[in-house]
Length: 404
Image 1: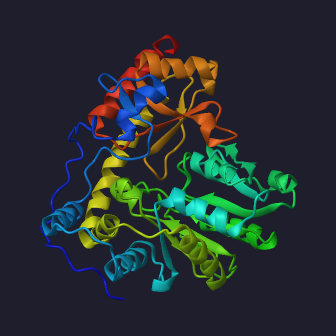
Image 2: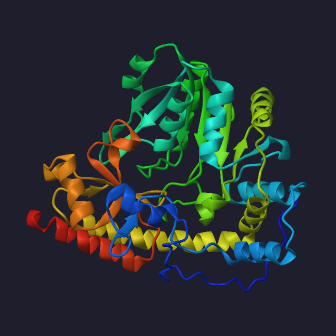
C-alpha cells in the first residue's frame, strides 16, 4: 500500500496550553452556549460541544494555506490521496487493511449515520441504541420516522457493561439495525474484543445490520485497553457491518464535515451508494485535503502528544471532582468527555444543574439527552487548555462546597 509522503522530521511542537479566543468565529461551542445554557462566554467555561480548543497539526494548516495560495476552489475530482491516507492510517494505527472501494464519503458521521438509517431501514423499523449514548443517533433515527429501541447499559463497579440477559426481552421483532458507539460516548469505555464479538453475534443471530461508530478510536488514554476495530473482532462472524470513522474528531477539524462509511459487504455498499447518489452527496474540496494532510506521520506524532495531554487533563479533573462528596467521574478510558454522576448529592437534576451553570458558570451537556440512564449525569469536555480545566475544577468545588 502506498503511504502518504513523509513530512519533514522536524515536526512543529503543539502548544495545547495556548488560550485561543474562539468567540465571534461562528463557533457553536462558545458562541451558542449562552443561548443554550445561559452561560456567557465572557466569564463562562464551555465544556459541552465535543470539539477541542486546540489547533490541528501544522500539516493541516499547511495544506489549507497551499489551497488558499492556489486560489481556485473548483469541483474536486480525483481523491486518491485522501483514500490512500485513510488506508495508511487504518493499517498503521489500527492494524486494519481497508480496500479502496470500501470507502464511501459522507458529510461527517451524523450524516453518515442518517444515510445508513435512511438507506437500510424503513419507516417504523426499530433501531437499537445502547443508552446512554451519543444523542445524535436518536435524533436522526426519530427524524427518519424509525423507532428508537433503548438497550440500557448496566452500571457495574463504576463502569458500563453490556446487559444481554435484560436486553433480550426488549426485542419486538421490528428491529433492523443496531448502532454501536465504540469507544463509548459518553461513558468513555473501550469495549473489549470479547464484548464486540458478543455484539456481532447478537446482530448475526437476529439479522440486524450493525453500524459501528468508531470516531473516537484514536483517542484512547495511556494504560487503557487497546481499541479493537469491530471489523477485526467480528471477522469470522461476518455480520452485515458498516464502520464509521473520521479524522475530524481526532484532529479537531469537524468544520470540514467529512467522514467515512467503510463497507466491505458489496450488497450494503451498493444500497448506500445508490442512496447517496440520489441525495447528491459528495465530499468538499477542503475536507479531502485536510484529511489527507492529517493522516500522515506528522499527524500521528501530533495525536500521540495530544493523548498524553488529554490524559493529564483527565487526571486533574477526576482528582478534583472525585474529591467532592456525592460526585463521581466515570473512569475515562477513551474520548475527552468526562461523564460525571451527581446522584450521590441527593439533589434533583434541576438543583445540581443550576449549581454547575449558574454558580460555577460552566456549560456541560445534560445527561438525559443521551437517553435512558443519563438522568443523574452531566458530560464535561476536557479538550481545552489545562488552565481552564483547573479553573473548572475550582469552580465546581466552590459550587458544591457545602457538601465538603
